[in-house]
Image 1 (tube, rainbow, N blue to C red):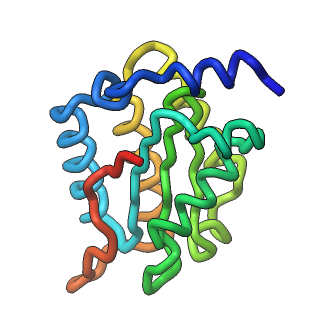
Image 2 (cartoon, one colour; image 1 turned 180 degrees about the vertical axis):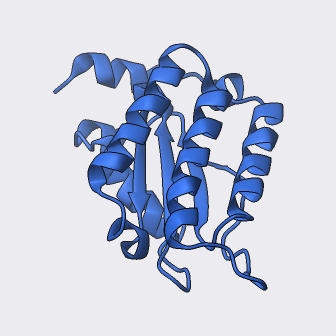
Length: 165
C-alpha cells in the first residue's frame, strides 16, 4: 500500500482540475481536438480525473486500469473504424494513459503511445498542463492522420469537449 499515493488522492482538493485546467484551457484543448480531428477519421477523447474514489484507491487500482474503465464508460470503442483514442489524466498521480481502440492500436506500437504519455507527463511536471496536453493531442493526431486520413463527409462520432470525471 502506497501511503503517499493514498494521501495525494484523499487530499485532492475540490477544484483541483479547474486550477490545473481552467475553463480557458479546457476550451483551447477542445478546439485543438476539433482542429486535429479535421485531418483524420480518428476520434480523440480527453478525460481528466482529480483523484480515484476510495474503493479504487484502497484496492490499488493503477491509472492504466482506470483508463480502461473510462475508455469503456465513454464508449470510445464505439466508432465505425475502431479508431478512437482516449487520453486519460489522473491528476493526483500526474499520470497520463493513452488507450487506443483496436483499429489504431494494431498500427501504432504500444511503445509509441507510451512515449507520448511520458512527454505529456514531463510537461505536467513543469506545470504546462494545457500546452502539454495539446502537444499530446497533436502527436496522437499525426498517427491517426497517417493511418486514417480524412475523407469528405467524415462524421464526428465522439464529443470533442474534454470530460472531467
